[in-house]
Image (cartoon, helix red, strand yellow):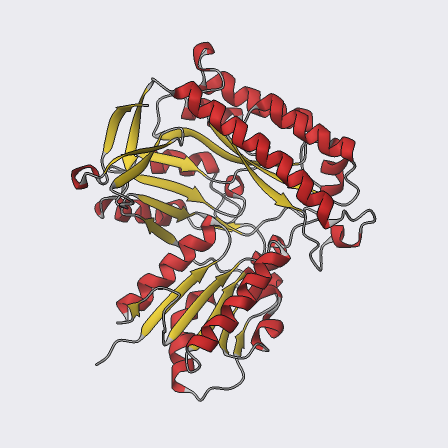
Amino acid sequence: MEHKRIAFVTLGCKLNFSETSTFAREFLERGYACVPAGQEADVYVINTCSVTETADKKCRNAIRKFHKASPGAVIAVTGCYAQLKADEIAAIEGVSVVAGARDKGRLCDLVEEALKRPTGRAGIFSCPIEEVENIFPACSSGDRTRVFLKVQDGCDYRCSYCTVPLARGHSRNLPISEIVAQARQAASEGMREIVITGVNTGDFGKTTGESFLDLLKALNAVEGIERYRISSIEPNLLTEEILRWIASGTKFLPHFHIPIQSGCDKTLKAMHRRYTSAVFEEKITLVRDILESPEERYTKVFFDIDVIVGFPGETEEDFQATYDLLERVRPAFLHIFPYSRRAGTEAASLPGQITAATKAERVARLEELSDRLHKEFCDANRGRSAEVLFESRERGGMMSGYTGNYIRVERPYDPALIGRIVAVEL
């Protein structure tokens, strides 16, 4: 029997990538053959983001492209955009399945049902987000060395610009026992590093009454996994207790992905963020005080910081406050997002919407700052010894991997080093 060809497209965050990887495993177990998204296929699965209008547009463009390449293919759309705008997606020619937050776990079954029925109007499988109680377990293996492990979904914060609570629902989590079982499975497959992911990762425990620190301690005890990273944790949830435990001699690396969104208190208040600029700066200082020795200051901990520019009402002085704060705290990298006006959010109706040209100019200034800070961080680590986990990709005769504090290192390709943690001089 000829295998059905299936292609996957993922837009957005690490959480989406872990979910797509889980979809792919189930389809492969059912005998499908995975092909690159640019090729002709019998099924296309698009896992969407909806954090910006650009993300929505990418999804629509992908649908039209795939329908043109394979007019008879089943196109299945899931993810945040599918939850928020199911009817809009279903109206696009070529779409067969739209699966919202409740039904993404049934995606394989929904696709197989669509393959049996005549092409026509898409089947919409969705419900109001308030009714979604389940959580779709997801774990992605990246390059045979690193795993993105979903531990939590949804968010109870109501930031004025954000559609995530509307698309993913309230904060909920898997039990620690189930997450540990997934980590042990990853270890048995030869994985060495796990990145803990979620929408609001530090909010873990709402469903089961467990704590985020309970989870970290349980994962730390899993044999075979040698390194952990914490992805996307709110500054108010990265507590001193967690930091002191990490520093006590654990497998958790000095790498934190933390959102600030703005360094201006007026803007933070309008965003409904749960901290001030001073509290954020104090938290970064606390992390450094606990995890860095005086001689390691500004060189050991890698901070990824999320920031939004052009929020409604943001003046040049407000933006400069953000720029100045970021320059003071010296993160190693900035994830910069121009504010995107999203229907259904409070910020969409605020006065003082910023022009696209002003947002682009501010993004460019922060990109220049990010490049400079990243170069300074890497330069400060030159000459030091560090442990690198090498990955399997070969590009131009070279292979690469990351240090514990997330510096990318290249060396001539050597298959014997794949999946090994090797001491190198930077």
